[in-house]
Image 1 (tube, rainbow, N blue to C red):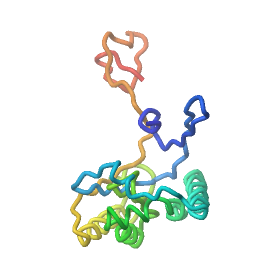
Image 2: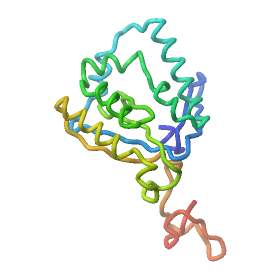
Image 3: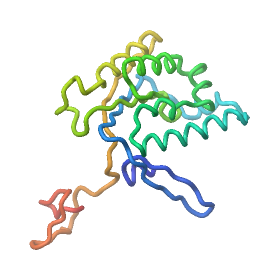
Length: 204
């Protein structure tokens, strides 16, 4: 819930008493290609295919990848994201037992220029990173973008596996939950809070 509340990319821990969350820096121009299949996946089903025991080698693998991922994001090194999103704990089981399109799609996305591709949460959605110049994608030249090629490659891979779906191109939102209008008015004639419906009192 932390990204929803605070915006951006968040990493959280529980201290034993409360949750703590910190924002992670994101590379400029990072774009997200999100493939959403036309079926609903249940988290309970996705959890059911996981092994009860996790090996020491798989734990070590994932800990290293998480550290590498956070560092790549903080340093803006998009080329290393493909290593940071590698996984040895849940993707192998879910890819082989639930989502046969997962690994072909990951390979297709990277071949088309994605900086990394992985199963989003428990699935069935798959997410890929692409990068371009910072700012809105609609003001970038096509030569600066790989989002369309990656999206098409992901859909083609899914179709070959018998799965239909739609791709969405998005960017990380730095704004979390916020009020868009308020009544009674929050602003005054002298002080107006921008970012909301200023006609109804405007709020930050």
